Image (tube, rainbow, N blue to C red; front, side, top):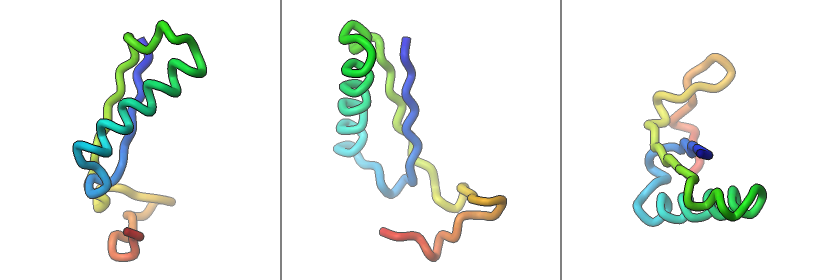
Length: 67
């Protein structure tokens, strides 16, 4: 059972993006491994508030984030 986790800033995710990620990640998994895995592939799309992210030991500079 393949499990693919996609974690993004929450403001980048809506229903359309989530559905596209689930389809796309499943397609890639089936393409690079074996088509029979398609029906057994789980994809979890999670959104996180950027203020809870850090880089290089420091909180992410939320005020400097690109759109």
